[in-house]
Length: 163
Ligand code: SME
Image (cartoon, rainbow, N blue to C red; front, top):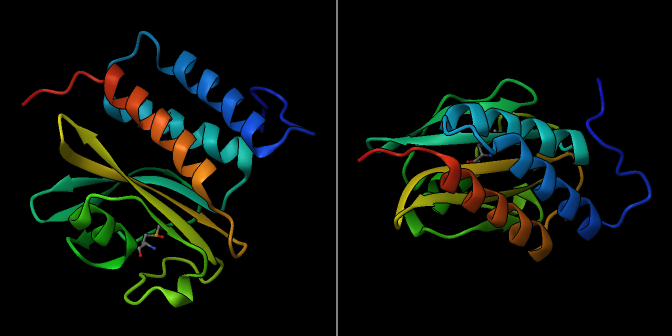
């Protein structure tokens, strides 16, 4: 894979600062939400090498698989189901240090050990979630939530979202 930029030797915080800058430059001038979601998943995956990085988009009472990088995943998740459906229902980010400790977790890959899900909102309306899976336990913390939320704010800012 061609590397967009080198993050070798950087701290997590420094990697995220570079990631935010690259993500914003990739989205600048592009207002298509799906195209920007696709590139956002690619840069996050490239920088951190997480197992799975992707979006689920709200459609009626369920989430439908959107742009992602990683192994194949389930296509539809009902509101309130799994980590994604609960994050949507509660309108809050969820950090899962050990997926086996989350009642109702939906396993798309046996390799997934920990997970973070962050709602994507436009004008206080949730339009989807960003879901990231790690092959290691305890991967995600408040630093991930802070910078990923920042990228999502940029994402929705660039998108031309009607209705
Ligand atoms: N683990 C998620 C399902 C989606 S996959 O991880 C890609 C959940 O429990 O909602």
